Structure formats: C-alpha cells, structure tokens
Image (cartoon, rainbow, N blue to C red; front, top):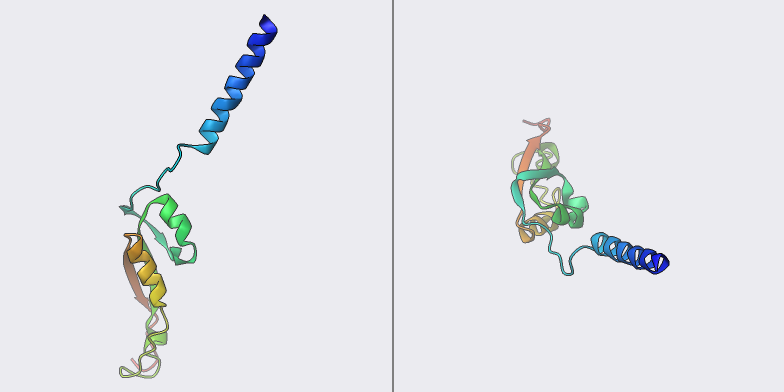
Length: 104
C-alpha cells in the first residue's frame, strides 16, 4: 500500500514539475511597459519582446550621419529595419545623438 502511494506521489510530483516548467499553453509575452527600456536591443528583438521592453535607446552618431557637412546625409547609419521592428513591437525609440563632426 505504501509502495503504491509513494509511486503515485512521485508521479504527481513529476507531473506538477513538468507543468510548472512548461508554463501555460499559448502564453503571450507581456505587453510593452513604457517604464522599462533597453539599450540597443535591436540586436536581439525576440528577447526584448519576451521581456516586455517598452522603449529602446539607439545611438545616432552625428559625425557618421553628416560626415562632411550639413548637406551630406548618410541615411544608412541607422538601419530602418531597427526602427520598423521597434514600432512593430509597440516600443518607443529614444535616440541619443552624439559625436560632433569635425566640420561643425
């Protein structure tokens, strides 16, 4: 009798452990929280989505965006895909402009 109860208890414990480890079926990632952000999470957008990141900081290097003067624009410095991905995930983008070009 005790032997059967131990087996049953062990099976129930194992089943409970598997349920906890797997989590609820079809669990959705948390909604983006605007108070919680990440720096340059465009490198791993899946992780930021799973964590509920609400905003992303991207560095914009002025000396690379306008290298030789105000009329010289390098629009490839920040990839548009990064901005589109952040928007698709409901994340705001906080841009940080740094590095003054020599001409300025």
